[in-house]
Structures are given as structure tokens and as C-alpha cells.
Length: 283
View 1 (cartoon, rainbow, N blue to C red):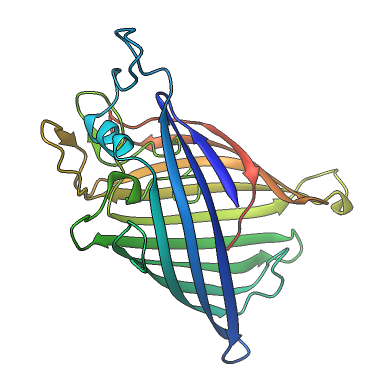
View 2: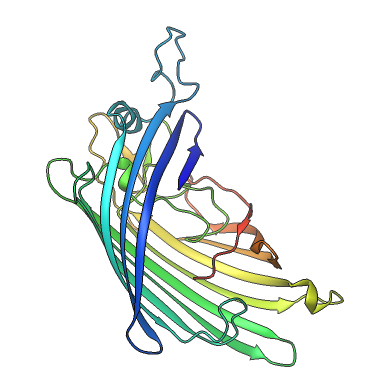
């Protein structure tokens, strides 16, 4: 796989591969073993305020600048997961429980040295068969800790996304550099969501369109950034919350979703993004 993410003053390019094996233990329980190797490369983008031809002089956190200056970063990791699944229909769930937990260890060669633990759970329940109204309650948590000489880098920390909480930009909550406003990621997160899904009136069911109303809550905190001169804010546990509506389409290319969310609880340092469009990931 290969991916690129663009930020205000720098870009990240990731190239890697994953080998994954799954083994059923019972009808509802399975385990997953995976190996991942990837290389991250960073480059400045429009970061030469003094026009001397040397990138790295712009309104960007010194913690990020130093991490980019370190050059490319190789990650080699192995992970072990356990899943409990009683969902009735993975494409159009109405009933059931999905719980999964994963421990990932980075340090089998490469530069990254950390241990990451994540988990999430989703419960689906039909609220009205006549109205085809389905309720969903979900939640998740994660923690990452570095070890060895390299410790935990800023780019290893968790970044918020639309699976954590909607209504905010990618990486738009959590610890922040007070001088530049750049978010630095966090070592710990918790999130929860409640949602009601329903068919759209008038539109035939064969079109595969459904609507949703939801409420999200999340916190992302803790930071191992210790760059001299970088003063951080929002490093402790502070709750964010949002409410919104969504439109889901079971397209021939896969499930697609668009959400509109309004933050109802946020910090002054947070970055808001009300609309989100992309591939829908239920589990």
C-alpha cells in the first residue's frame, strides 16, 4: 500500500505492506496475527518564510520540524488480535455484538520502538421492525507507550479522526503547541457513540440509502513530546462532543457515507470540520 497525507506546511508519504492471518476459535471468536512493515517519508511544503531556499522556517511546531529533520522512519511491527462477533449481517447489521482488541509491538528491526493496545466494541439492536429502525452504541480506547533509546515520536502518537469523533478535523483535538496551534497527538484516547439508523421515506429500499442521527464523545490526551521550548496545552483528559446526521449508501463500490456534525463541547484549540465524506467503516 501507499498513501500520502498533506498538512499545512508538510506532507507525509507512507509505503508499506501487511501480511495477516486469521484463525477461528469458535463460531463467534477468532484471533488475528499480522506483520506490518512501512516506511514514512516527510517533506516540508511551503515552509520557507525568509525565502532563503531552506525549508523548515515557517509557523510550524518545532517538535514537528525536528521530527521531519530526522528523515525517513522505518516501522516493523507484529500484532495479535482477538475478536468476538455475533453480528447478523456484516453488510447491513441489525442485531449483534462486535468486540475486538489488539496489541501491536513495534521493534522487530526498524526505527520505531513502542507497544500499542487498542480495543473497540459495537452493539446493534433493532428498535422497530415495522420502521426498520436500528440502534447502534459503540466505543473504543487506545494507549501507546515507547521504549528504548528512540522512545515515542510525535508521529507515533494517536491522532483523532472521524472514527473517533465526527465534527472535528483529522488530528483536530488533543495536545497542542501553544505557540503555533499545531496538534501533536496523544498517547491515550477514549470514545463513544450512539446512533439511530433508518430507511429514507419515498426512496425504494433497493437504492441502498439509509439515514442516521448520532451523538459522539471522545477525549485524546497525554503527550510524550519533550522538545525544548515547546509549551503544550490540552494535555489532560478533556471531553469533546458532537451531534449530527448522516447519509449512508450501499454502493456497488462499497459502503459510502457523508456526515454533518456540529461540536457541542470543544476546546478553544480544537479544529472543527462539520462535513465528512468517505468510505463507511462499520467495524
